[in-house]
Image 1 (tube, rainbow, N blue to C red):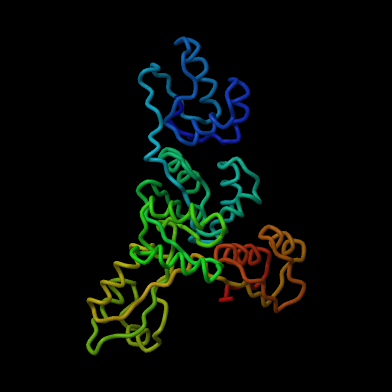
Image 2: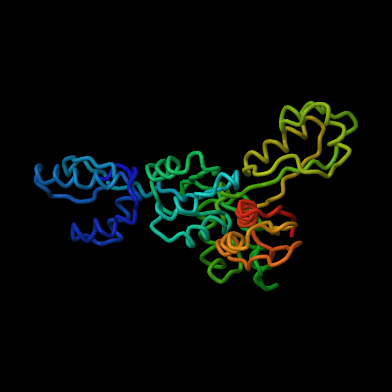
Length: 337
């Protein structure tokens, strides 16, 4: 049985499947949904020999009696997203993802920069752990969410007025940011495939926390306690409101902080940033060949003159593009679209 993908590259699944005479999709499931059975009915000596061969690919393999191998628990399967925290440190992430997900680097970039950064679906905890280990120290957070236990958000898309009215009626007694798996599935089955509504696992959404104002006698120490704003800047921050206090908060963290700030007499709100549009603004160009390579990697035409602004794009693509252009010698920053 496969205990974990370990250090293996899932692209090996094709060779393993051919070598063992197994379907490729079944072999991929055995690897990504490990622990799970790969081959059954072998004699002990043959099983041990095969286990040694498979272990050389980096898979974590164990030989056990057939009757001790449990089927994969579908109720525990996860979706996995990768969120970029430090764009400069994430330089090698596309290559690592490509190897892990058995795809080319262009596809890995597309997965990474398309909100909400979903890179794997219906995988096990062992696979999540292996991907986290592969990406440790590369400036990203790897987030797993059990499908059957997740809470979902229904987000507006480009829709007709008629469809919008229908969806509003569907959501009249529901919280659009707190749908169960069943509620989300029902909405998706009716509207999602036509582009009328976007259903997203709430665990993968990210929010900015805004400070809008304060009561008559606020506890300004909460700014330090909750958002690490040093005491000498408390009055300046409050005077600048509305102002962003924090980026990249999960939904739960955002809700908790809004509540905590309210108790301190400070008025805050969360704003979803997962699908926010940004641009990359360049004020100085670097070496032409390197700039062209960096731009092509993220799907934009290279800047020919400075100043230059990219087309509007999602935040993660903008941050990674800016970091790549900076490495190419450009002076570049991410700005609101």
